Image (cartoon, rainbow, N blue to C red; front, side, top):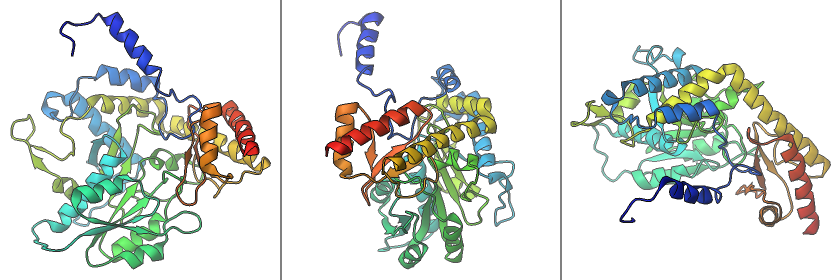
Length: 395
């Protein structure tokens, strides 16, 4: 740190130079995040100092968080949920805003573990969860942090989790299952209703990672069943900072039952509240304000138009790619495309080096992974495909 302060113009000159090193989403076909909506940016700025880790000091920001959770609960059909004990979440949706899908997944599994082990001594037992092979790498962090085993179930020919494989991995120490609604590599939705039936039959928790798909699936012409409308789903992760067009970091975790939230409780004797249920202590009230603003501003109609736009780009890309003899691994379920190309790793490298296209690669099988987001345009699609044609012709 310098001894004396620097003038603002010198600092911002440096910041602008550094900012130029960041990718501004131009020619980005690999990210599940995008430019936040301008109303979200302004709302974020307005609440920049608000700390949801100390709710009594920031009652307004906390009110916005509760309103956001209420809107998300309605979107995910939490308001019609009946709790086995006879209670209902209809007037008090259970959940809170997180930093994103990773934190939400960690907390969901932590809740499972706490509820299973509460009041029980389980010496020598290594608990486990069963997840799809397509699950996000955040579950590797879950295993490391909580000392539980993560079992990976096989995928079927359409890259959905294979139910028979899941069933074969369940044992006496299994505490929960995970399903993906919009997996990162293929944009595929697991058979959630079948997973839920399996969870109920084996008295297991079922967490749905809908970090990306949560703001896509409800607005598709033919939406999949993946949320609390499905009996057996116990928790859902959803990220407003992806297709929800909010600012980063804006994630959310919702529970079917208040008992989940209670299992995460930690006493906070020197704050304005007596307890926290969150993983992080300090939390951004600005994210709550940003998410509230953009959800209220766009409404269902606005999000429907946003998804329709991205799906139109997706359809255009797949159609014109086929005309160039590039076929998708599967017909896209949402705005994610896995495209068959020769030598995908080399193609990716050349697309970035020669034409500044940012794309990524699926793991198994290896294919070009493309995400069509609101920052993309029809011209982007056309130029990308022409550049892809040039790169593959040179191989």
